[in-house]
Image (cartoon, rainbow, N blue to C red; front, side):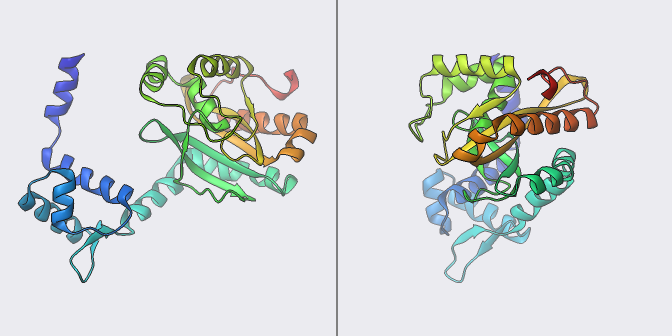
Length: 266
């Protein structure tokens, strides 16, 4: 195992590693920084830092202000939007969402998948959006219906890594922070084929989420419908039926032979 990790490390380009480290650091830091500050905070040689910054500025991944400080440009956003628009799951999700959005005008529909750093990421958010999340927004896997479906259907290797590395931050009184209880909940979600969740992250909302698969029974994403607590409680059965049917339709449309529960089996 260690040999494999070492091979992966030595196979990377060290200059590119440092360039990506700078990009990710600037994205997290959120304000423009001077080359010496970047060099100092990341412990990268000053000459190397200057060269990498100039290269990324030349390729328009960074912008340099009049005072010599660097920040991200819009190019990464543009590439992200291209990924979103060209992703077949995103396109199919948005084409399948029209009828439900018309039926449930006070709800929103979301498509999410695995992101970086043991988090999920929204690929698309449509409809009423009072929580102001957008495509590209990360979310905690343990505190959202989308995230719990992703975790429930993730590989055992991913689950083990998640539970070894992650602290389960409490976002509301509904958030499960006990790893044993969360594992039990994930087992139940996988058994049921869906997750109905009170406001773990956004306390005023209830959410229902189901998995989406592609060919050869490969799990790729989850979709959800979210609305106010009162609306979801009053309409739980029909909402569950509709979101299960949408998940099944997306999966079969991407050549998956569905194995999870259909609305007729509720």
